[in-house]
Image 1 (cartoon, helix red, strand yellow):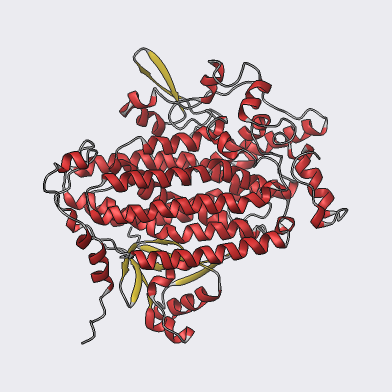
Image 2 (image 1 turned 120 degrees about the vertical axis):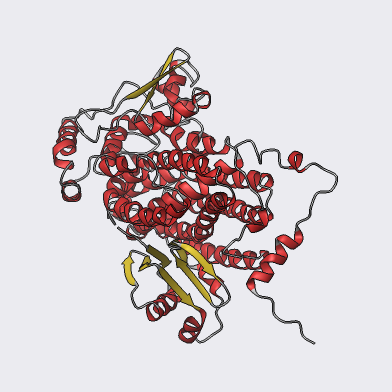
Length: 511
Length: 91
């Protein structure tokens, strides 16, 4: 008699519960050493239900298919000189920011999920974490592979991994992930899977990949969507973990709420870089940061927290602040990078007239009043041969490590400063959100590796800007500074003028 | 104010077009919004993708887990079995 076909649920149970075992001669506390110290109480791991019920054979089948599709497109992109079809060479700077700032986090996610897959005592989340760990390794590999094509033609890509550990603003994404990875397993999964992936990464991947498509970047769209197709599974893991903790014990609620508050704010601050990219670095724009925040956080986040209200969870603390400052942060960030791009491995520029008009239209309450005059002044200086580079080093927020450049939402002519004293030392913050995070765990954040402090302490190659740039592996005059004066631009103009055959395009550098 | 918004976002490609059409057929109140390279389908409370409808449209067997090849993002709680892939609010 033929065996009856198993249902999806049966198959999933066979792979998880049925392959797990109870420990008879070892103390489970010794096997899962990190399971208790955060205070999360789990009564019954068998209550865990993964809504995706993906078995290993199906996982390999679909992931294999995703890879085949991706590599077919990467080949086509390279063979057809796809780098020449992007809207403008300025666009490539967004990809430089992505490779140096985001791709190394994918690798950290691979490591992080491998670690917590080992530490969480339930077999359901162990399997989900194992799959996610493999996904994240795939993401970092496909991103490096895809972007390597741009490295043949544009500057600033060549030493991204080295730069991730050293360059001042890259400490923002790096410290974000290190903060999560040095927490316990429950905080890590709440931070990364729920607060970051479920609540916030749509802001990165959806407008960014749509923007890449709009700007003719077939390569990035493809690795982006290939990675993103795993993301629905990751987001669901985050949501299920949060619901599971809340269902297991009432004592878990205040701990989980605090993590949601903390990691929402940490992730939101990190997304400042994405806001800047959407508003300034895409020659053809899909939507403004403000519109994206309204669509993906105010509308969707609102529905999500409404859904979680039955567990006693409320909206993350300071979410009102994110709404109040949505017309400010992307402009503050681009202005800062405009000032400091002599120390960054990508180029900045003043938006062209029609682009400034677009910003005025999208930000009617803030752009003309607080930002446009500044850009017009800098553009005028640039025309006179006095392109402005800020020679000082900025003060950084001890928590998010972003320079203290955010305006007060209540009066944007003021800069937002907060501080706390701990053991007789004063620590500085960009916001109430960052100050709260420090105040709750000062012993963790007093250890922050703040790039400006490190330069002043002599730990970054020397006392002068050229010393520090050498230590970054950043080639002055090639990888950095004003776009208009860059070898990238000179090459691009020459290629687009058709002076050289595409097959003979020079490698990056030397203009 | 009640907000039960859910969505499914799919890549804009050949196979996903049939999935989008199936969603439109089975969820008359969902709204389909086009972005470069991507389609976002917004709904209130629940959106479902039914195996049978997709199979009718593409003329072959279709496993709802194949949706993973084309998914960009979701918002809502996932409810998945052999015949349906759905996102919903649990209020």
